[in-house]
Length: 210
Ligand code: NUP
Image 1: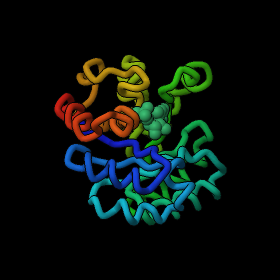
Image 2: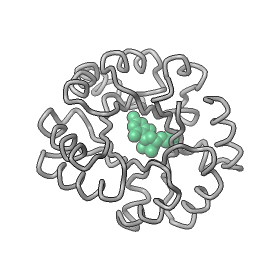
Image 3: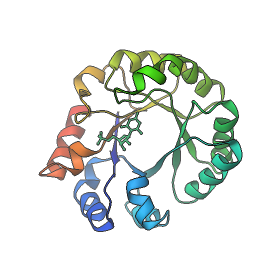
Image 4: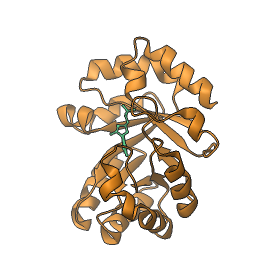
């Protein structure tokens, strides 16, 4: 499996310093609102020079017309985008179509990793995994904090996964290792960028999954 860094830092200098340190051990970089809101989407131009896949984690959850606009702007600079599935087939389809037209990827959030997702998202997650499959999305996002759910959702969707929740949220690499393969990504943020030694932390994680 591959290692995706969740670069949820709020200033550019920190982002660059972390990337300079960990770049040899990561396969992809996930950026979200913490970094993009202060600087704008064009910050991705600076991250592009690291030559890693860049995924925008904007969790699109709007009507089709708005989802499409946000996806189009983001995918000018990124390789893939994360969209919510719960908003419905039409909203998700809008993102997947624009991504495919641009030669980019869509990852669909089906069940989130935090405790609050159990009540509202879990009951519809299997349905969303099937929707992602039927709409020919590229990935699902499913929780490493619940390995049994991760396994089930991966099976239902027949898609590769991007799975967050490792270490800081309680997910354990040894518990999900057998579920995942070389097409899947584990997403790790704080356990790397907040570590005393981000480089060493990224290396250790890479060794564990490698
Ligand atoms: O279900 C999800 N859980 C989750 O943590 C879907 C996500 N996209 N994320 C994101 O993954 C979250 O916003 C953060 O960017 C990353 C996990 O970070 P950390 O818990 O490893 O610091």
